[in-house]
Image 1 (cartoon, rainbow, N blue to C red):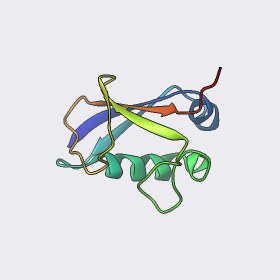
Image 2 (image 1 turned 30 degrees about the vertical axis):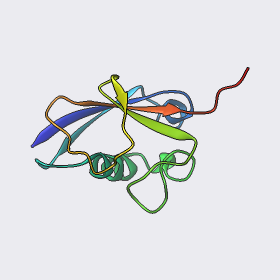
Image 3 (image 1 turned 90 degrees about the vertical axis):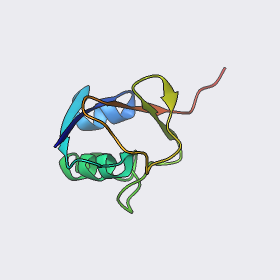
Image 4 (image 1 turned 180 degrees about the vertical axis):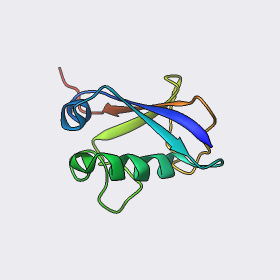
Length: 93
């Protein structure tokens, strides 16, 4: 079992009604698996934040793994204690 934490910011936080979601995933699970589990737990995120096909993000969002780098590969394997940040990409100025 792999325990990961998903941190939510902006609209994803408002839709889920919480700042973090704790997920217990099977060993060897990927970012895609984490997003699918998140969609099952928080259906309000499907469409506005999570892709409705189950396992991706809306194009206006990005993932950061452990706050160190953006995660373009949804098939990357998660380890115990990993933190997945869901960030909104639109910014302006």
